[in-house]
Length: 185
Image (cartoon, rainbow, N blue to C red; front, side, top):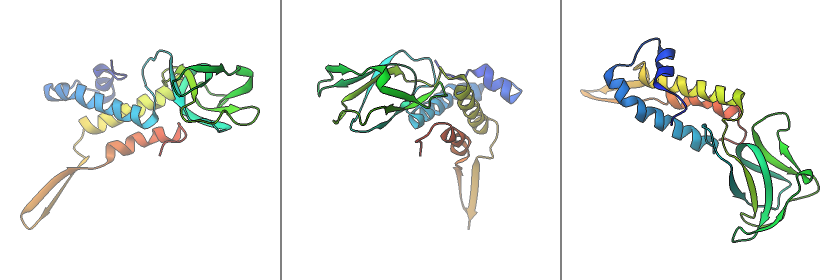
């Protein structure tokens, strides 16, 4: 299921989609959402709890954007839990936001190792309404840019040869997401 429905896009456009646009909507919408999810490292839809593994040896451990962190574990190379780290030994950062992007060890560094720190959480921005609304708005604007106008096409003609290609307009519309989630290049 996609975050953005056809009716939401039609509402933003102020008109119904043509049959060609309706046919293309599912593909364009899916590609748009996949691009955003890859960019931020988390889902934009409702997610169930999952565990992701990160390299230890850091005091400030960057993690994929998530909500509802329920456990931090030290695991061996087979991902067998050696120790569940007590919640009082770390801080979920940023403290004043629902969406978390870092674990800060209170007393020194986390255990050294490769993929030896397991974080159990909901790896989705869906639980943070403010962030989700910003992302959804950016995705809607990108869809409008793709569907509603041909201004994202450029045509050049030199001595009888012409070429038409797409600009980076859609990608630029999605750049607002980079400012709300740290660590996105």
